Image (tube, rainbow, N blue to C red; front, top):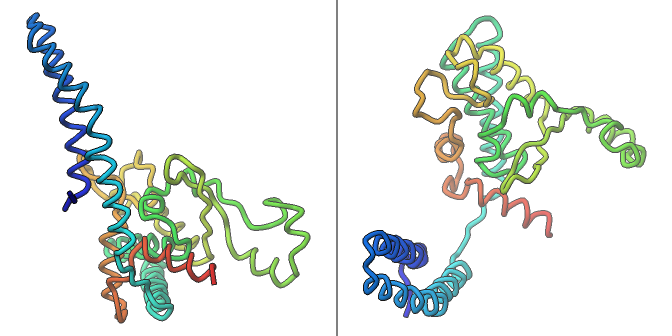
Length: 259
């Protein structure tokens, strides 16, 4: 027995359990002891058999599927091409916004800055796209105030290089603190994005840096990184744009560091 769609199998097992408990509750309400007893017997058998017959098998199939799946990592050339393309677009937008506000330039600057920071830090899309203004306001220069002992051990050239960057902490997966580095261009871009928030019709109570303009209460308050990554990976002229995704980029840097 194998499962074509693994999530359906495990989710269906949970759903059947919830339905049975709900049915038992309704039987109690109408004082139907016979059907209540039947539902309890079914629930007992279901909870006894499902972990072995369905859940365990679904997990095994999921592991086998992951092991056999071929993952094509992006080339260094494509990563550099995308990163350079984004930085070039940021510089063009900054030049336009230097003298006066332009909504299209501001919007493109917001989008390019988001993906550029994601690539530079190799972080999850959800972590960077939900970057808060409050997080940015706590940024620190990479000087001896971060780690005095470590800073003393650095060479002078390394210290000068580190001073170009700032560090901040955001909330990552499962609430864990995640460090993010910003280069001078990213800092300049974010400062410009924040400076024109009001002209871009961003709500004053929107706490996200990469915010969505407008007054739609049902829409997301921040722009989504995944669609932008797909778009820019094609626009930059990469040889294999499908490999330029958040997950593969994180695996790319992990493999590079391993070797």
